[in-house]
Image (tube, rainbow, N blue to C red; front, side):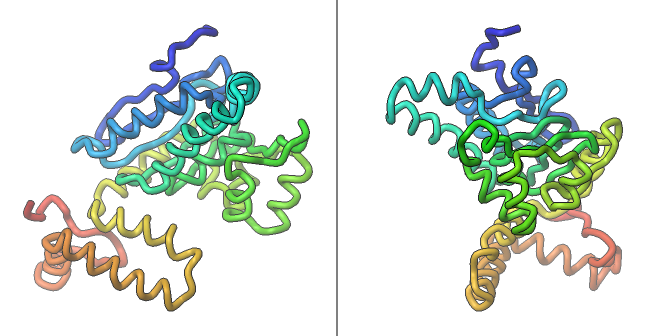
Amino acid sequence: MTDRSEFDTVAFEVEDRIAWVKFNRPEKRNCMSPGLNRRMMEVLDELEHRDDVGVLVLTGEGTAWSAGMDLKEYFRETEAQGLQGTRKAQRESYGWWRRLRWYQKPTIAMVNGWCFGGGYGPLFACDLAFAAEDAQFGLSEINWGILPGGGATKVAVELTSFRNAMYHAMMGENVDGRTAAQWGFVNEAVPADRLKARVEAVAAVLLKKNPVALKATKDAVRRVGTMTYDEAEDYLIRAQEAANSHDNEGRKEGIRQFIDEKSYKPGLGAYDTGKQKG
């Protein structure tokens, strides 16, 4: 298949409160095109506030997660439209990556195969990431004469050490999922036949957590990285106050179950959100 419609460039299904969202251009190793980027924003819009969605998993159809930007559609064809076309394509891609970074629900990248170049944008945007041990990660831009764009250089510096990031960007060599885990690009690498089960297990844990606390926590982790300690302390105090105000019953219920019922221990598990009043 070579003429996939824009609508079909992203596929998704919801099962047991997990939204499985797939890059769906396997014939192109799931390269991101302007059409895919537009469709991905629509899918994120549709799923973000659905009551039957508690966790979003981003993965790829076929043998790749995403091999980055479609060189023909994203570069040659948009650049032929001049600066206006280039800027529009950039807004469409960076826009949904930014949206994913601050998504309402917890997000997991399930890297089932190739993850190259522009694919580092949505990889970083997801809160957690798991990869197949034989998945391939690469910043190949240096091999065809440009620097890693789309935030990929920043992602590498954020997730791994200075020396690893420099080697990765300058050499243009691939690393497998095991090395990606060692470098911090993903949380874990597991055999490919166990990848989905591992992601499902992580998602199941997240689904038991208080959703207001999860959203506040994931935002806090992203925000405080660029703050001084005093700035972070002030931000976190205000964020905690806001979360308590928004979901005061959740906080009260967690404390009640711990102190009064003694039905759980915070260091060993989460309180039962099913008992919480609406």
